[in-house]
Every structure is written in C-alpha cells, then in structure tokens.
Image (cartoon, rainbow, N blue to C red; front, side, top):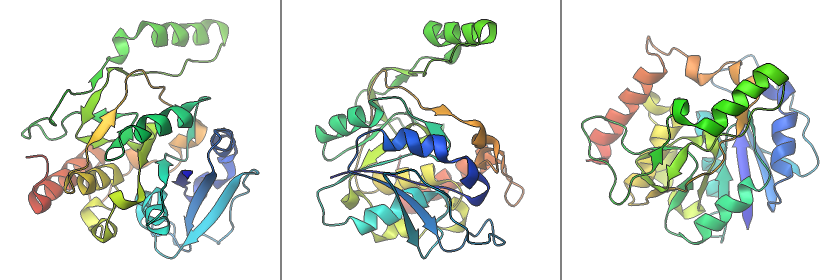
Length: 266
C-alpha cells in the first residue's frame, strides 16, 4: 500500500487546494490529510475543516503533535501493514512522477528512509553518517535552475523544479520539505513522546527517532524539490520565535537534546 500524508494549520486551509490537487494526481493508494481536533498554536480555531479535492481523505487525530502530525498518526494507524508512507509539507506543489520515483527507490531499500533533502551532518561536532554522503550543488552553481529563474523574470515562464543533490548518498537529518518515504514500523511509541524543546522542529526529532533505531536516511540524486506556493509565508515555522529562540536556535537545541539523550549522531 502506498500512502501520501500531510497535516496543515488553519491559516493555510483556504490555500490548500493546489497542494492537495498535486498530491492527488500522484497515483498513490490514498492521500491522507491529518487534522487534530484542537491546535496548540491556534487555540481560537473555530473547528471548520478545509475543502479537499476528490481523492484526499481528512483524518482527525486526538493529539496535536505539532508538525510531526504529518507522519506519526499515520505510522500508528498503519502499524502491522505492508505500507510505504510518503509525507510532505502543506505548501508544496509536487511534480509529476514525484511519488512514483520515491516509492520505487524506497522499495529497493526496505530498511531505510528515503528523503529528497538531507543534511549530511547537522551538528558541527558530530561525525557524518557512514557510507557515501549525499552531495548538494549550491544554488549559485546550479545553471539550469538559475537560467529558469532568469527566464521567469524576463519572460514570465515557470521556474524549473530544482534538483539540489547531484550525488546520492546518506544524510543525518532529513527535511520534510521535499518529501520523505518511511515504513510504519520505523517509528515506535517513544517517537510520540515529543519534548517541548523539539515540538516545533519535527525534522530533527523524527530523524533522531530513526537514528536511535539504526534506520539510515538515503537521498537519491537529481530528485526534484517541490515548489512552494504562496501559503508558505503564512505562520511559517521558519519565521517563528519560541521562548526567545529563532528557528536555527530551536533546531540546534533540539539536535543537542537528542544527541545527549539518545546518543545519536556520535
């Protein structure tokens, strides 16, 4: 069974259409949109659900797990089943064949996660993952992408989907922005016990949950990075400040916590 899943926040409900339509067109068995019954960040939400296109199912969950709601409830719901789960963000427009390619790659690596975007090493004082590291082409040296950006400015043509990694390999931390394929059994009960320090930084927490169980993260080369739509600026976690910490500070604090508590990335 091939499942695509995600979550969303109320300020973005009205603009979900293009994202959900691009996901529904991927040919997966199901597209699941997980929405908690109440939001920790949005206590005044009136409970109205978004409109979804044909082929997308809204599933309610009792607990708001923050951005990790896009995968953890699905992993629990599908435990014991032979399933691949591809999760992504709620502001992406994915290209044709995106899901098919990622599912096929993970089917050849049943004990590994597959991610479009990774960091080979997150904390500066920790060693990189074993095996060949995924290598990213810096955006200023990506001629195809830069040419499409220039053409967009001059002619109004669409910007190309960027393919940032030119050498496949392993990463220490994945980023859900490009899509990640996992199996339900990859996340055990401890993954749901998210500490406050990591509640807003799901990529760090979820990657640590894989690392502590010896599950590697593979990044295939030349995989298209989904485009972000306009809703990405609405209540963005990248711009969020929590207890005086910005996103990078929150990421580092969560990574240091996971490194210390679970002895991962050492």
